[in-house]
Length: 104
Image 1 (cartoon, one colour):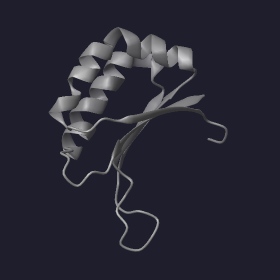
Image 2 (tube, rainbow, N blue to C red):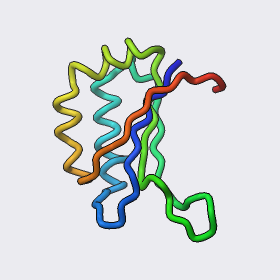
Image 3 (cartoon, rainbow, N blue to C red):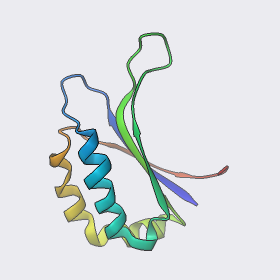
């Protein structure tokens, strides 16, 4: 099992529409990826590790797939459409990481 994390750095001058991301963008990703996406989560950053410290990321999602190949097979055919939707909720550039899930 792998997890694709898409994280949006917390920049106070940036725009991020959490409702659009949760209610429109991520359901679009799931619909296009179909069974390649086993599940996903959406996070909204609240705080950092220290008192009064801001969250490192304003928002993020984690997409769970059986393998990197399964993710690529589900995402690649729809990448243009999915990427074209990003300006509808943010002007940030995401940080992406693919990880192996070792405890689930």
